[in-house]
Length: 171
Image 1 (cartoon, one colour):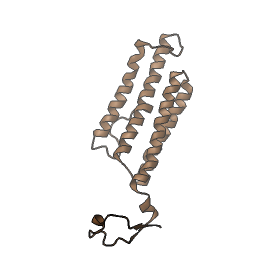
Image 2 (cartoon, helix red, strand yellow):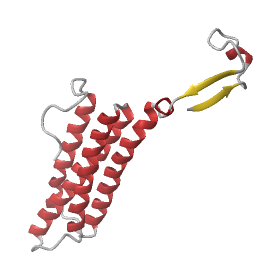
Image 3 (tube, helix red, strand yellow):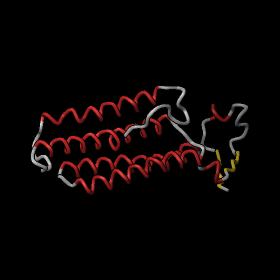
Image 4 (cartoon, helix red, strand yellow):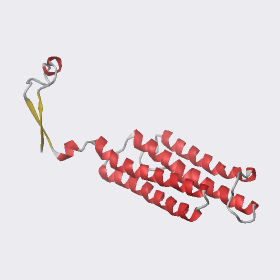
């Protein structure tokens, strides 16, 4: 157990009924020490892994490395699955975790699939080559990204979806 001495507090705080003595000892178990906020850091780290993997996938697509980008989306998928599973296992949830998860999902499962779709449309317009420039006719591919963001935003606002989701997941 961790031991802490509370003796440097001001007399105003320590004079209350809650703190009758300046020389009070507090014993904390490991479970007490690993607070809910600290436990939430582990699933949030996986969520950030999802985001980073999606961002790198987008970068790979920008340079025409679609094979690597697809693998990175798979990594994002695994991180997205395990962040939620870990949060449920640890019994933690936070508004930050919920928002962060949706932001990471917009990148990995909204922007990146939109970019893949854009590349496929552009390639079909330019004889099979990955696009080197902007193809205006392929820009509607990003409607997929917009609807993914809309879906995730609605999820965050819907009070009925605290422990799961209603409807279709993002792509």
